[in-house]
Image (cartoon, rainbow over all chains, first blue to last red; front, side):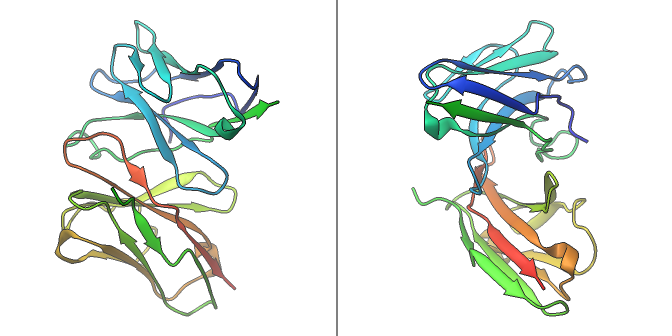
Length: 114
Length: 113
């Protein structure tokens, strides 16, 4: 079973920031938080990941709480092309536990509206 | 850099037939994964190769599914004989050993009728 909990759906206005929450209260000390998204019927796309510190890349920012029990993915200026299902996944490093496989939950369906 | 390539993109077969799906990972990626999404369900892990060795095949549903990875390059997933419940989208993903972000292919949509 997935170790994360996400709202099933969210709306966001185009050009505004999209903040997608995720709860992972049972996360272990060496497990990472990953975010992927799936646009329509394409393959999942890696967005970002982090362990303890906040992370930022060209796609998004990841804010992880100090106790690591929850996190927020931020798309700073959402566009219509960001409409997708977003998955928050907790995963151990290679060589740990089950070797790094991803366990997908239901994700959050983000709709960006004009 | 070429992405992960899957072939065919779509396959429609009759129950009882055999189908072979192929995945070409990104060159140099030692890790190769198979996942699938069946109708209305979440994306589920099937198995993980490290080079040509099966690292984890705990997600393979039954012995009708056989995965191989010849010489640590491309991989095939054979379903024999196919059943109706095997219908879904099969995804392949790859990553380098020391990287944590997978690159997924576009998937093969399998329909068993």
